[in-house]
Length: 228
Image (cartoon, rainbow, N blue to C red; front, side, top):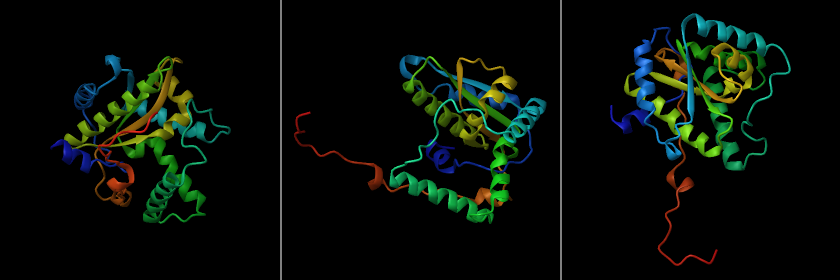
């Protein structure tokens, strides 16, 4: 599979088959992904991988904690409430498209909650990855870690596997930290489901559009810039 093919074929899968993924394959994916660039080669990412009984216990613990309010305070903010219109529109279209496909109405809170709970089962994927960054590091290291996450997803796709990056796990960083043995000096950025997509699942038919180039690309003309 070429890089172009992997990029086009990659998608956030929300229903996986229970088929196991050999640890050697997971190690190979992470070994390849570690070639992602990072400022001054700091390689700021830390990964905790779970499967089997460890995965089951962690999922059960997070789902149990989810029933208790208030939830732990997130270590970093998610999307702001006051999004600029263009980003709000894209987010809204994404949510509406997914829930319409699943037949979940706007006021059907029970069905929406059930779908959200599936995040904390890795959508059925047999392998879960948690990616963290040391708290001493700043935004540049988070950018580096984003490139590392993309590298994981492309390396997985090249091997016929699928993924779903999941920011939802950051809501329960306290539970995850205990179960994987992460230090208090590490920030949980996200989890990631890894496995074989269920080809029969309706949710996996959902495809997200991409904005045309003219919405986000400016080709700068060759002219004298104004004084800064």
